[in-house]
Amino acid sequence: MPARFETIDVDGSPMPAYVAGDQPTRPGALVCMHAPGVDDFMQDICHRLDVAGFTALCPDLYHRQPPGEASPLERMAALKDAEILRDYDLAKERLATLADPKRQVVIGFCMGGRLAWLWAAHDADVQAAAIFYGGNAMVPWGGTRSPFQRFAEITCPLLGLFGNDDENPSPQDVDKFAAEFDRLGKTCEFHRYDGAGHAFLNFMRPSFREEAAADAWRKCLAFLRAHAA
Image 1 (cartoon, rainbow, N blue to C red):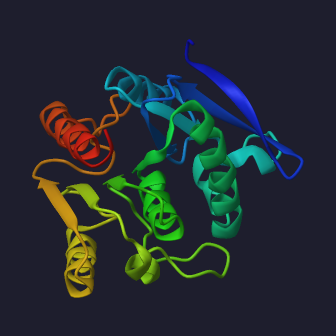
Image 2: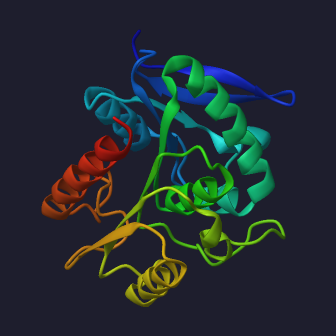
């Protein structure tokens, strides 16, 4: 089946979700969108995962917000962790009908990196989590605990990919993440890239760094395949 947008009902609110791939024997990948939404970059990630042997599903978390001229940062600021987790609970159910329900991974970029940490802490069924430069991990959205405060709940192997020129998360933030996972005895693998900042994988932005992006994507696929494929 070709890639397409589907609609998932979330308590009466229609949530668009981009889907690439549809084979019940494949592992499934929940793709956590970045602040601009389910744009061409996020759709491209879904296509890449499809080619790599995963069925990918990327929900649009802005479905509760009215259409308008709000900026991505304004739209992101309106999100609440409890609502996001509700969205992902239902996205997981849909993905389980399109791929092997026992082999689901999560991958996220920027804001979505933060959400991938959050989802990995929430859902004990996740087989692996790949986080690309996930910022705001120490900030709760909507009065809940932050992803950082929930690191102890993560049970799956985790891969983090960061640019050393990034400011959110900064190298100091990444040091804190690594130290916390080490303290908790969690399985995690971090890679950092010199000369790369935030969104270094995003070919749609000036921040794109081809060499770092290629290496990080290779590492990401190898990691996800090792734990779920």
